[in-house]
Image (cartoon, rainbow, N blue to C red):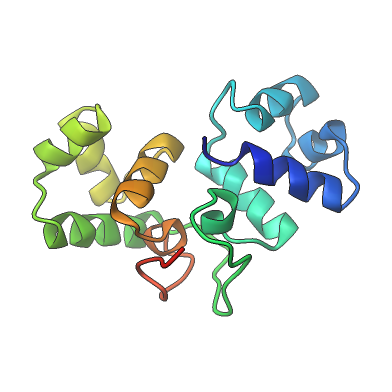
Length: 152
């Protein structure tokens, strides 16, 4: 659904086994195995770390684009910038926080906490927004400034 195929391909391409990647993330191999099969959803901070390790974009990992990486790339997540961009995106698409929370099947307060930069957007919500509106996950997270919208 999100990232499992590409994550496995990237891991195998560099010759790592699941235990080695789990060690990189400082988690147990079993947990990483569940992440790779998407039995559990990997948190954005781990996805970001692996994207940096494998030198790929989150958009690529999410299978939103075939472009592996962007030239201008900030490897760190920025909650404040991400919140600002989420709010701008929401307003561009004439969505209230309530409507976006309904689309994502979450609480209004969750959207508010993202937009205020209190929390970074959760992986399934980020993926849903990016897939539905063709917007870059890397852009929303503050990793890149361009492109904002994707052409697959």
